Length: 188
Image 1 (cartoon, rainbow, N blue to C red):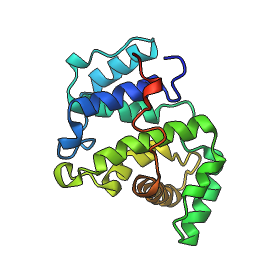
Image 2 (tube, helix red, strand yellow):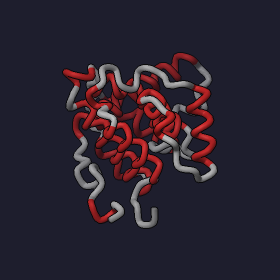
Image 3 (cartoon, one colour):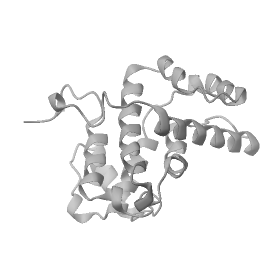
Image 4 (spheres, one colour):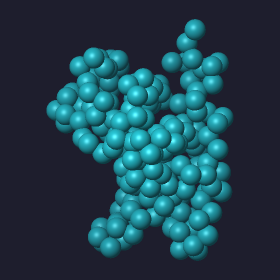
């Protein structure tokens, strides 16, 4: 969609989850969808086809969103920013928001939209049991990729860093500029 500040696929999938009242479903994002169907639809989407949501369950759509985020050509949080991320974690300050000024605009806006969507889910944590930490556990491996760490201890440590980072974003980042998507970007 021309002029859309985020990938259309992300908007399409997140809005389908909201349309299906996924924010009211206990454990949303925890149960996997039908892997074969998700892979088939992902392949169709890669060829430019709009997904047939009628053939999918909520878990399929949620799995497709996580897969899509994880398969971006470049992670939303760039690999060249892993060092500064690790430094903030080691400092114990939890001051992650300033790191966002160093990432490319497209990454930042896309991440902001995703976090805004996750904040909507987290607001209903009493119903869906998905607080910021649970959502961070589900999404951080797809947002913060510790590529190149072969040592299992380092990889596990980066998993902790990623969870804390994403949880902090869900809890503290003001995403109101992009989520929900401003009306000027929506089709008439």
